[in-house]
Each structure stands twice: as C-alpha cells, then as structure tokens.
Image (tube, rainbow, N blue to C red; front, side, top):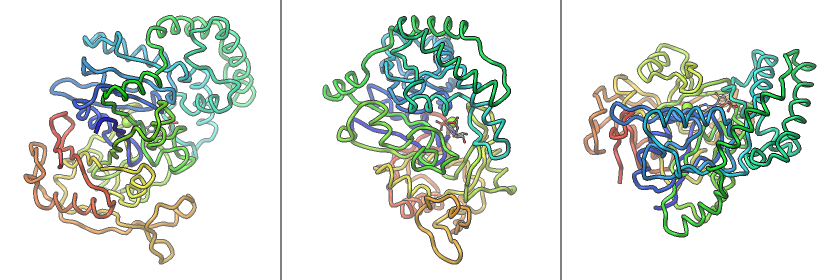
Length: 426
Ligand code: IMO
Ligand code: MG
C-alpha cells in the first residue's frame, strides 16, 4: 500500500506519531494536513525522544521528505522553535520540508483572543490548548481576515493585512474582553522576518504530492487530534476546529480520495480525553488514577492530566464508519498489563433502550450509560513481545473482542513507546 492515512480514532493522543514513525520505514513522504501546534506527537527510538507539534514526525528519518499542507494552521514561532531544536540535535530540514502557500497563519492576536474567550466562558470553556487554533481557522473561514503563508512572502499585502487585523482584534480585545491592545509594529517586524526565513520551504504542495504519487512514491498522511474532536463529527462544541477525519487529508493536502490506498485508525487499548466535553467511559475512580499513573497520561503539549477510561467500542465503531478505516493500530496495550479485570464498552443504554451508534446529539449522549463486558486481565508484561502469537491468551482475547465489536481488523499492536515495541499483525 503506497498512500496511507494514519489518524486518531478517539479523542487524540492515541499514539499516532508512534505508528507514523513505525510506518515511515515504508514511506518516502510524510504529510501533516490539519490542526497546528495543538498536536503533541511523541516518538521514541532508543534514548532519543522527540515531541513534534507542527513538523511531520517523519523528519527524524534523514532520507524522507515532509509536507505541511494547506489545511494546517501554522504558528511560525512554533515552527522555527521546532526547526531550531531539531537542528541543535543534528537533524537538518534543508530541502526536506515543503509548506503550502495556502496554509493559514496563527498570529499573536489569535492566541490572545482564545485565552480571553476561554477565560470569559469560565466553567463551560472548551479547554483548548491555547495555541490559537480556533481563532486562526475562524479567520480562514471568515475569508476577509485570514492571512496565509503566501501573504507572508508578499510585501505589498502583508503590512496592510496585519494592520487591519490588529486594529479589528484590538477592538474586540479591549472592548469585549477588557484586555490590553496589541502593538502592530513588532508583529509586522516579526512576521516579515518569518517570511524571509520560510520562503525557501514554500511550494505548491498539492502538485508536489500528486506528482510524487504518480511517480510511485509512498506517502503517509499524519493526522492530528482524533475523530471525536472533528469539527463536524466530534462532540461539538468540545472539539478542535478542523476535520480530523480521513476526508481532511484530501482537502488539507490537495489530493483526491482515489489516491488513498489505506486508512489506519489509531486507538489506545483504553480511552483518554484532555479538555472538557462528554466521555461516557470515563473512570473517575481509583482505576482511572491507576491507568493515568501507569500510562503517565499527561498532555505532551500542555502538561494537563488526561481523563482516563475504558475502551469504548461505540466511538471506535463510529471512527471506522466515518473514516472508512482499513484497520486499527491498537496502542498502549502494555499499560493494561497489571489489571486484574478489564472492561470494554460494547454499546450504550438510554432510558432502557440499547444504543449502538454514537449519538449525534450531545443531549442524547449525556443520558447514555456505557454497557460493559468484563474480560480477565493477563497480568503479564507484554513490552518484550514482538508477535501476536506470543501475547498472553487473555490479551489475544481482548484484541479479538475489539475486532468483533468495531468490525475492523487490527494491523498493529503497540506494547511500548519505542519504535521497536511494535507487533505487526498479518
Ligand atoms: P494530538 O495530535 C488531544 C483538544 C483540546 C481541547 C480541544 C480543542 O496530540 O492527538 P484546540 O486547541 O484544538 O482548539 O482544543 O481539542 N485537543 C487535543 N487533545 N490530543 C491533541 O492532539 C489535541 N489537540 C487538541 O484539549 O479539548
Ligand atoms: Mg497529543
């Protein structure tokens, strides 16, 4: 399979980067197509650990090229911080990173607006990563105020756009939120400098990718966030502002759906969520704390503790449907190694009725109770295991039940953070 999408089948943090890193061996190009520096993609190989927010995880492989597609919202400060960090560790980006001129920018006022808005909402806040993602996408959709990478490179356009935006946003910041106004001059100076530095990376990435695919190159699309955080299909409004689902790879990179050979959904062997919003299988008891501590479930971008719960087959079934999943990659199986018993949510019940499909209406979802099946734990370490056959029987049964309930085969199982701690399932 030469063109693959790897995306999150839950609420993000599924271990997508680990799977992308593993599959990058069989790829030439790795592409980010949505989201921005809200993502926290961690990869581990031996003693090396990298956390990526914007640059595709494939960059650690010196012979691969990486693309940031038009669907991403890019904060140049975050990008150059990442490039500097990589170069300090001996990884060069030169001629290996391509960025679409249609990619929208995250500006300092987006971050200020988001912070002010979240503070004003108070308790019902979305609990965003405060990376300016929502306000940047809002400007993109709004059309008149969006600023793209292409504008950064155009000295006739950039000053006027920044000036108009800072003036408009200052009205909102000062009058609506009572915040301090921003000064347009330092923003303009910083962004002119970013433009000069970013120029060598900018190219028509849609043409680049389509030519590469036609020439037989293998492309891996690296999703950010997860299906349940999708702006259309997720638990709106507690979602991110982009299409995290498979269609987002096409619109966010400028390729047609007919070039995609395979869609791999990454799901943890349990469920986590960071930020507010519904989470039917959440564990607010000792078991939830135990999973958080064993799994060190703290956000890679914000450091926030993640909410933990049982595997929810209802949400993963939905992910299989919306993304047309070819297979699942189940990650963090090892985190469940110690547990005596493991619950798996097969469906929900509401007012005595059985619910098999994830409800589209949050009010309906609020009234849903997860129905569990209890499976015996395997209570054996799995990290050193490299074949499905060698897994303990109870772990195999658990994985088999996931396949049955999600009606999706499993192609990969991850039993540790390291690249090598992976079981490929035929
Ligand atoms: P990766 O790619 C987990 C969540 C935030 C919040 C909501 C909206 O590492 O899986 P945003 O800043 O996007 O406007 O926040 O989405 N969120 C993530 N949760 N993993 C992520 O990325 C996330 N990116 C955003 O916590 O609930
Ligand atoms: Mg993350």
